[in-house]
Amino acid sequence: MRLDKWLWAARFFKTRALAQKHIELGRIQVNGAKIKNSKSINVGDTIDLTLNSLPYKIKVLALNHQRRPASEARLLYEEDENTALKREQQKLLDQASRISATYPEGRPTKRDRRQLDKIKRDW
Image 1 (cartoon, rainbow, N blue to C red):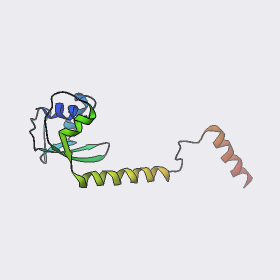
Image 2: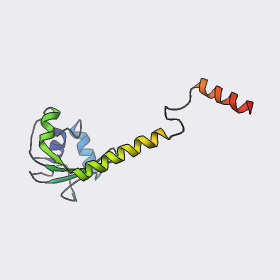
Image 3: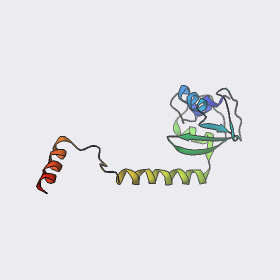
Image 4: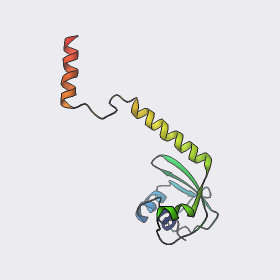
């Protein structure tokens, strides 16, 4: 089965075109090697991929040519626990960095800016 089609069927990507793009950019490796879109994968292959700067390490358990519901798609692969833990830690770090940002809720509104200017003038 083609890798791009399997990634689409396993619901890692919304479209096969997105899967193909990630493969071409080298964000997906099979058994430690960079591959092409048409690479055939088999049960037992290991896929390393990066989605939204988060790592995934997946072992192929089954092949399916149709895109099925998410509950069935999860049965197509098994995820490495260490990589899952690293990804969760990365998500927590990203959330913490957003909280400590200067404007965690976005840029100040016009009203907020006027209040800040008033405070600065009063000093």
